[in-house]
Figure 1 (cartoon, rainbow, N blue to C red):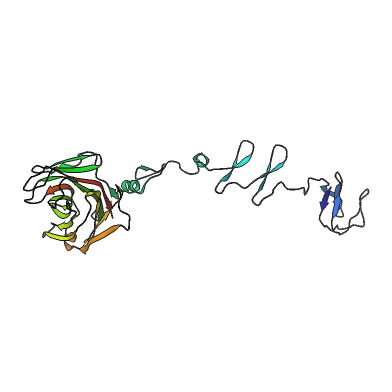
Figure 2 (figure 1 turned 180 degrees about the vertical axis):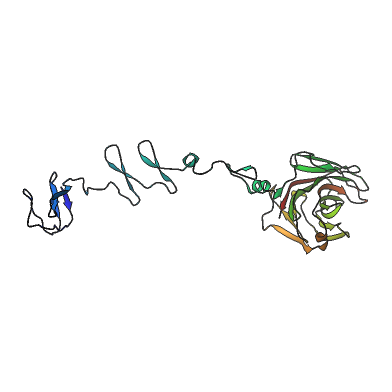
Length: 328
């Protein structure tokens, strides 16, 4: 039996034959199979047939539930997992995790930027390299490098490292180094980590030079843990020094040039990891007007040497790894 809410009929005093007039009241119960008609003065129109399915109970039990028609009756479809969407299946809808196939044709599934395929996750370094903002000189072979070793020095590039080697007890100066054409912008940030094995004296000097047509700026790390920034552009000058730096491959240097501003930091990483953003120590930060009068760098010079007139206590390797140059 169904129950109807309160209704007012236009003319309850003139019921049709076989019907019962109903006045305004609190509701009307209609037996199954009976017919409810309303007389609007011109005829009798059926507006509802008594049926227990009308106003029947809901299968839902919890907020967010939906009603889904099952094989033979309505049934409850509970709220799906957060972030899932309602997907039509062969016979029933259900909550599903979105997949690439679900958006085919609506969203491009193959995209590139500067030739880099973005259909897979990409690192910040990969994005910067594709956009020409990160230069990582190859450390897999000497290809692209020019060997500029002299005296008893030699250089090799392999396995992610550039290694300059000088035998012991050699004097005067021996150089074990290589250069590579500059491939970044005039404003840059270069970072690298250095290791010196063999002689632990100050005469064993690993160097990274940013060259401007034969002159430039040298970052020198020595076997005794010293660090120096040297200027050969124009007048020769030692601009800053530090001591106590590691030579075991965890020591890093970072040199930046923006306009006429030069900045040098040093830091210690963990294993092969670069120092964190707040783990760099500022060593030098000043303007050099000579930078405004010249074009950008021409070469990157990396390697090692023994100091002028100073021999080494034994064969020494100067190893540079993880050379990163960011264009600014």
